[in-house]
Length: 470
Ligand SMILES: O=CCCCC(=O)O
Image (cartoon, rainbow, N blue to C red; front, side, top):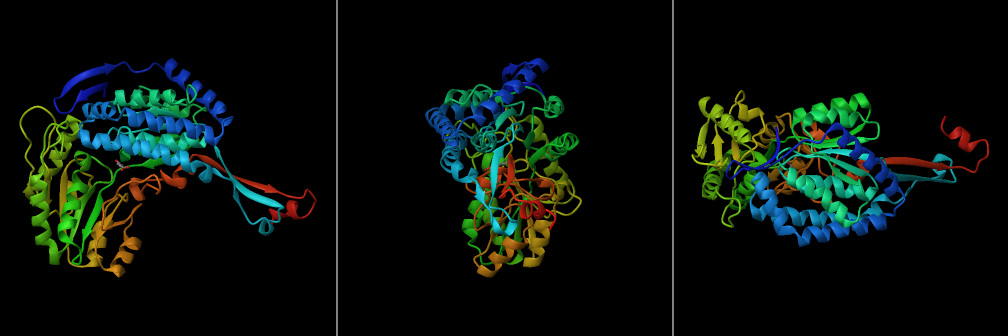
């Protein structure tokens, strides 16, 4: 894929970039390594001041930054503005909380025969971040803000269709005051990742992206014995039980499926509805999905903009057609629109069966699959019956059922009577083929820290010397 900005609303190529040479990449790695040593000599409070400066820049430049993102990947301007604001909030959150998150953690010295014992969180060095286009600012920020606060440096290999956003991020951190090299963008194709991650100066990698991309990074990192955090695809269930508020559930389901033009790993994708309320929910949901306005993402009245790439749209349509050809019912949408731009209508498909692509695959567009469950147990079986386990949603007002869903849904998060979303305060990540490790919160920040055990004895032969063998 060429490194270029192509407006998904028109299909027009607006700007192209030459990939960086190996020499340029090596120089950036060297700068990241030097900046790591420099950051080591700074306090958390100093790094917090730089991060607050980044937040201020984001807030001041919100509208033009949002316009750039909309032009590069098609999300609505309103959603892009919200994304910039969310990034600023995350910067402020980590600036305010990193001292607490990185503080030495005392342990029970007596229990380990020490005079003092504690855990110290220390940075590990330059981290490679391989990031996707769908939340081009946020996905990077949720890695960068905690990583920089911890004292790590970042090397960004962003998706090839968002080069302007990638370059903006490098500039943002430099203008905010972080040392040269603390955060660098590498304009390279994915074939360069093996060489970068194999460099001994690069200590770890984080990837948000597809399952194949995750496997590839994990393979390289395994060979090189480097830590990875992987946030991969999802096919999140959205279960609706008879006690749920159906109007509210249908409204949130529509947002949960069509947020970001349907292109979010944590979008609800499989709607598992109890038989008793299936018909009522299906009617309300299809009506809401059909009422969404698809069009120019810069227009305030648009709910759903174009998909980011022509290839992505072709894939979504092929999945819908495969279901229709195999006997599924299309309640709304499903037609490829004529004209320029990679638009796709909000679509609801039901009567899905095993063997259809939509049954097993993630659909990365505004397409919902509706499934019928005759009991709680069947709902759980369908919900957990995929290779993914990122987010999950369940709608019920029965407290006992809420408890059961919280335990039984096999996913990195469970949202009851709401939709999956990310917060700087809460860990974010998945299980099964949705990846491993966590981003955000103290848990995410510590993924790229050396969790160092410090044991201090009195120096006498005896307790300290013998402690390890007991
Ligand atoms: O594709 C992943 C989307 C994550 C969005 C979020 O963090 O809210």
